[in-house]
Length: 376
Figure 1 (cartoon, helix red, strand yellow):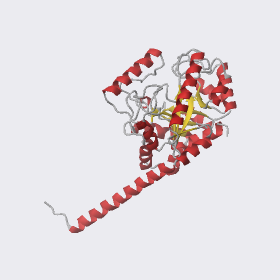
Figure 2 (cartoon, one colour):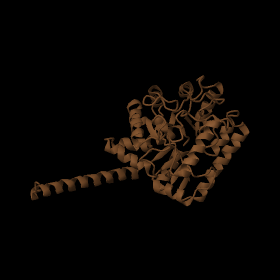
Figure 3 (cartoon, helix red, strand yellow):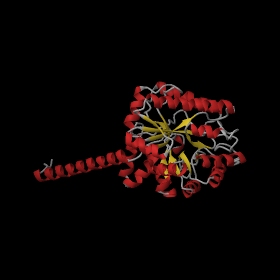
Figure 4 (cartoon, helix red, strand yellow):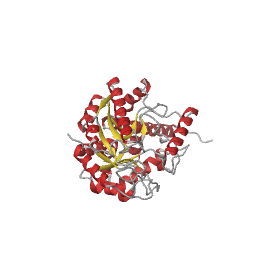
């Protein structure tokens, strides 16, 4: 057996020390980028799937928010799907009231967001800003004047349709693909006037195209993927990604099974779609909207039961999409942590993405769009 010479040992030790030092510097650089960046989840929530709807956030969930480093979360106010108009409006107001109460109970962790400047203030204060948004227009589709009141209550992002058709247009699962209705055109104009971001994430192809054309302000796909990499109704074509970019808007990558043909996605799936979207739309027009919650999911028998029941409930309601399976969990492997954005930052950095680009993806691009659309 060849003996290791003292010179080889010293050389090898020096190389290992240099490698370790470089890795530590790289880790420190990633931590600094993340620490300084405004980090926005373009569509997310708090707690995890174990949290019953309307239940108070536990101390552990709130601590996850404090530890996450996330500056702001756009969270969904229910309902979605076919709901009688008055019931939908009432449910929306109750939903806003729930978050208002949670913010009041945890003022050291949360902060209301009404203007882009509030997000910057949340960053400065070390708190998490909360933006209210709809994933369906059912709360006001029969009466656009209700948007004025909903705006006063804090709604700042509105998705024109969910998966199915509503009075404003067709969702992405409607075979007719009929596009934006007359009421939909009026709703987009009203949102522009009030300073509400038009979100097209679940819209049908023609509805999205019509809304992009009708809007006088930037629009967004807050949570989506690339149809070129996985041809799915919830993913957007290259032409759609470019059209939103040309409007000054953003398209946000989600951590959903629609990235990976119904299987639970991995960090590699997220990055693959993200990089494609950057290539197509440009680094100034891509963001992140996980479509998940801040706290990590614990995959055990209880989790599997809750997840299965939710999938079955969505199918029965007719609002589920192809690829919603019992085993395609709604988080990405390697990113199932409250600090998922920091982990993703390190992965992107290791692939050669610049700090400036990463800062744009983490939140700077969404901040620009919010500033352009919302009233100052």
